[in-house]
Amino acid sequence: MKVLVTGGAGYIGSHTTLSLVEKGHEVVVLDNLSNSNPEALRRVQEISGKPVQFRRADLLDSDALDAVLAESTFDAVIHFAGLKAVGESVEKPLMYYQNNVAGTLNLLHSMGRAGVYTLVFSSSATVYGESEDVPLRETVPLNAGNPYGRTKEQIEDILSDVAAADPRWRFALLRYFNPAGAHESGLIGEDPQGTPNNLVPFVAQVAVGRREKVSVYGNDYPTPDGTGIRDYIHVMDLAEGHLAALEFLQEKAGVFRWNLGTGKGSSVLEVIRAFGEAAGFPIPHEFVSRRPGDAAVSYADPSAARADLGWSATRDLAKMCEDHWRWQRSNPQGYANAGSAAGQG
Image (cartoon, rainbow, N blue to C red; front, side, top):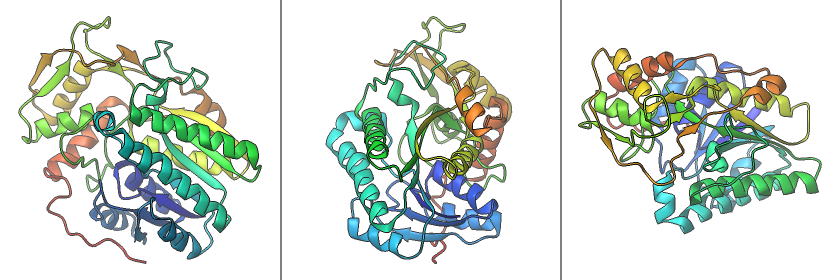
């Protein structure tokens, strides 16, 4: 298939692009590089030995979207592009609704004009909010607790309405839990700009010496060690889930929702210890006050993805930490010192 990957130079996007080209698909990446680096795509080509076409464009630019989709006949779109920092979304909600929701509307209009009706959407477990109904199933009522999560929830609603109105559309809504890890080569991985928003990249930056210590938000939760429990999933398992969803949509039209997680929770302290074991030394950390809105326990019920897609996460927490540390150790500043030329097609 020929696949357009929006946000394909980012963390999950670059790993999924690699999986796609290794499976023989032709990929065009569209990215505005606001939170990514084209070096990731150069390295995808290095690992795979296969070309990846790159188009620098923004989802808010309808003319640019139309131009890319008009270049050739695409079979599907995988949609990662979007702003993703919860805290920033609280401070700048208009920016998030404009970028994520309006950008997706532009993409859907352009896809319709180009006759491309298959989309795999990067949603998030944040759509569930602070639900205590764990493990979380796809049938749990959505109640996102911040603007970022609400943009994902609103896009899911939009896609559902579009599919109900026009039977040509095929949508997979993939609700990720907590991505971690990196490709085992150590060549591509997570390279957050500014302060990492998620636990594992923050721990990795402490381990490599970029930060002093990990702040653990709360140690008085009703969990075995008092710290919050989350479902961490290896980014390569996540990438493989996108390919499985893409294949599923070749057979069925409509809108489908799947959790992508391991179905197992790990506490903050368990993650810090596991990363220390991968690195070979303890990771300094301190306990601070809880953050408002953090649930004590959140993990997926991934049984629907297993039943419908034949997909399951196969890599455990130790593997995530091992691969993430290999990436961070080899690239202590991320892609910062790398070249800026990506493959042009």
